[in-house]
Each structure stands twice: as C-alpha cells, then as structure tokens.
Amino acid sequence: MKTIAVAGSNGFIGSCLVKALSKKKLSIVKLTRNSNLNSKLRNVDVLINLVGTSASQTFQEHVDANVIYLSNLCLAASKNNVRKIIHISASALYTNTEYGLSKKLGEEVCRFYHQHNGTHFMILRPPSVYGPGAQKGVVNVFANLIKTTGTVTIFGDGSQKRDFMYIDDLLSAIIKSVSYQAEFEQFNVGSGKVYSLLELVSTFEKVTGKKIKVDFIKDKTNSAHQVSSNINSTKRLGWQPLCSLEAGLKKVILG
Image (cartoon, rainbow, N blue to C red; front, side, top):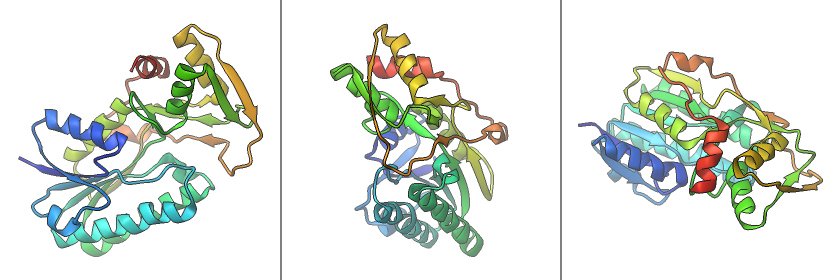
C-alpha cells in the first residue's frame, strides 16, 4: 500500500483530496504548515504539495509559501528518500504579477531538487479552482454574495477572462499523477475554456433563474486581463476535464 503525504491537508483542496484518497484505501499522512516535516515524511512514497497563497496576498506571503516553504518541503522529502513530489502550481505562472512570479520561482525550486537530488516531480498548473464549501476564488466569492445579497462586485469592467476549474476535475488530475511515471513533467490543467466575469455572472443568472445586480468598482490592482493555459498536453496524462461551468455552478449554489 502506498503512503501519500498531503501538505496543506487542512485547506479546501487538501481536505477534498484527503477524502478522495481515503476512498482508494491509501495510507495518508496529513501535513500542515506547522508539521515536523522530517518525522512526518518517514516511509512516505508520494508527497502532494497543496500549500499556496491566493492572488490577493502580499508578495512576501507569496514567497514564504510558494518558494521558501516549498524548498523546506523538498529538502525534508529528499532527506527521507521520498522519490516523488506532486506540486500544485498555478496557471497564473504565465501572468506578469507578483503571484505569478512566486509560482515561477517555486517551479525553479522543484527543478533544482530534481537536478541535484534526483527527486521525481509532477507539476500541475490549475486555474481558479471552485466547489461547494470553498471561500476563496471569484466563483466562490460570487456564489456567497449571490446567496446572501443578490449583488456581486466586479473590479474593472468585467471583460477580464479566467478559466474556472471544478474541484472534482482537479482531484482526478492529481490522482492520475500519483501513478503516472515521469522524472520531471509539467502539465497545465483546467476546463480548457475561458469566460469573462460578465459571462460568469450571466451563467450564474441562468443557473439561479434570477437577475444579479453588479456593482462595478475601478480596478486599482495589477491583475492580469486573462488567465488561462493550453491543456492539450494532459492527453499524455490520460486526463480530461468533465465538469462544465454551468454544471459546476449548480453544485456550488446548491452546496
């Protein structure tokens, strides 16, 4: 039986992943930011890193989580002979933002430990991930506002485009990665489609059958106009997204 360690197990994605892995009768080690890594990673076969930040946090917070903690995690894994790490990066890596920069640096950390220590890496780059129970991300924020006030706030004119990935699709990609044989590979994962924020609101209206009020506020942030990536390479992984935006929003609204 494989032993899987999940770093960030108390977060939204981490808690969902632990449940999904438990159904496959795998031995699971839960890791948080305060865990003693050297003791926790003994006899672990695969380490899955879900520790990260949200785009709205400071650059120092991005670096602390996406670079420094990741480096400590890789070092501890190497010392304990963990041969494979599945690192969850982000499609924002392609954007000219502080968050994207920290994700690029994180992947360079992975490459360093692969080249110098021989650790095998699978790197997945999802877009904004959403699902029932999540609190962060534009889909989840909009859903909570729609349920409570019926009004959403958009910074800018709403033309900015994003790929939105339902949680179950990301979990299936991670689980595929556990058995995928590779020394160092990077995959863009997502729905493969982009929607403007106005289109997101329109889809919410279709799902709820209600008109949603939108408050527009001038965007003073350095957010990217479009965040998306090509997912064609996932054919090698034997994975594809299954949940449409409309179907995913229904689950979030009803969840």
